[in-house]
Image (cartoon, rainbow, N blue to C red; front, side, top):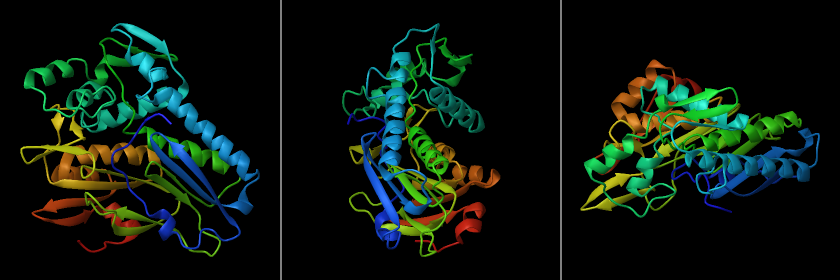
Length: 341
């Protein structure tokens, strides 16, 4: 599989270890490679109106379609074809691309630019993007030059076309995996499945309960560089989950850490003490985008932003050599207040 839509940090999982006796007779599962990572579907087989083979074929087809439309790691995808076009051009786009663009536009407006789908030139400049030439620290002039071709103001939809008035490049990596989860789960529900746990590159959504009545449980991962440790276990029913963090995809120069998460307003990697943030929302797409927004904003501004908007969010913050956790009221209403780590 091409390295498409690869997310560097994810919530997650330990789902197989934490969901109880998943492989009993009336729970079925399938999965495979996708988006530079993997996906997994677990569901109560008796609910489905179609065979496991058909469900897997339909899921694979959905994921292949998303890859062909939105991957920045293949030159023939719809979005990379658009990215190669000069300023002042339009291109007819599939509805999925337009849907993601609208979602990204809304997140950008709501966050006053903390979320930006047009950061690909900066990602490449720092060495984190699909066309990056290795990890490096660009000059202020290079950053300023890259930012000239950034901004949602340069993009618009005209009918079924996406248009740009600058040489803007779009990168859907910050929301595509969440969108994929929502597409796959919608197809499961259309096929009669009412109890499932779906994970795609670390983004998750669950509905209903397992046959023994126990909820689907997933882990929120503690932010350790070299190991996976469950920090908080939550029970899901009708909710999507996404985590963003800076603890796996980064590089260091002269003792300083440079995160893959870039602040679109400065053109540089984030520089604060927020190690990871998890967002829970009925829309996995929105959870995916909001986790990026809060990661960019940092612990103080992010907490305030989430609290003001009733976002269910769980923050893990560096404090010296230790980590402390904080959660919003909306998160506590869903899962309880928990204990600081």
